[in-house]
Length: 640
Image (cartoon, rainbow, N blue to C red):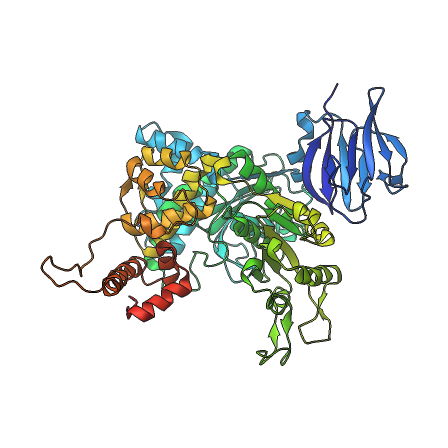
């Protein structure tokens, strides 16, 4: 018998495919069902899929509120691609889930391909062949692109040369190199042919998602893909297929290249996307020193993206590939998203990628850590307050909902939000109106909501610690991030990314990893997840910039990190403190000796971080406020 399944969609967004491995297959709002649909209009036991004489039948248990192909049913024998409508959910019946032609990815994404440059592997293959002198033909020209840019002093000329060579190697009709501007704008650094409009990106949608996620994307048939067939920019360019790939420099998505073919007879292929990834990786190596040498401090024309999305999504694991596909899908909608996963797993990075890859990218991305705000202040923080609303309300203050109007509000650790605030957040989501504390006038807000938590919200709902109706509103699209130990193959990529970004910030060479160090990184369990990898990469860059880290050294650095919360200062290299007393010197009080040691050690950490108190505090295992207080108490001058 064929293995059947259902594709689950909500508000037009594909969520997942679930195989029908057990009958009867109960569907409803109750957590006792095999398929739980979190929607208040869905009955607790809404419907059931059963087997009858080797045929699959859908049985309604809601009193006539189950629809199939637009019609209410009580019983219905299912056939392939029947659409079952229950509340805001659509369940597409798939008679043979193993049939390749009905791939869930292709059914949703149609002609869109997505690829992490690190996942491609072509660049690494070329590097290996280059060391053995085995490159020839197209591969040799891809690798030689760095020689083409060598010695070019002007960044704009170097970028133009890179684009011209890329278009020739991939045989593209139109091309652009862009980098992020303010809000959702981009600056076009180079275009070909030269007569093109230099103010309009070839594909704003594709470029926006490349800059947001660091993924290489390809639309192989613009006319068939529902996200691009209405694109005026692509239509005006006569595009039939389009590629876009990131330029990643110093660990950041600094720009993107976009290519177009106009002919329907020779669309781009997946192999073209792999070649483009390798070209951009090789080109970025050559461009970085050229751009760095010409960049003015604080220049608004810098190709390096500054703030909210510092890192691309890098991976080789299958689980992160699926999560990245979810990000690309949901970014194209306005659906509410709930991101779950352990602390430090990268929930904020995923939220930022969704925002910056969406049509709201020109609006604000407002972040709120619900666990960090005292209970008596959270309503004022979220909704604002009027002058005189309470003792310290000396003026009107806009809340986070108002600040996020037209953009995205990210409620991190929403599981820690007090019940009273949950009620008001639910009302704001349902009515799209808020009232400031002490005010009576409703204020309209247009906000996309992304929530995140490391807690099990369904369990909290069951125990009465989280509102059930708010959970239904949040659980439209759920993205579940795994522990880092579940995707060990991604750890070396993450470490190198963070090390490159840290080295760029310190204007120092990144640390290098020996094969032994890579093996240690991959084998470690990472209780602090991605955050722990980042802190380790930054700490090693500060003290061992440009040096190769051996397996033994890496093992020693990690040995003290197994216990969560242990001060990171325990892993600083041994350092000579200048004010050690001579053997014959009179002893002072322990308090004075401790103060001298702390003064020198804090001064060392500040020197290594270029006076960055936040980073020094992380290295020393202190809260920033505590370190600032110690700096003042000990009379330490912060290095410029």
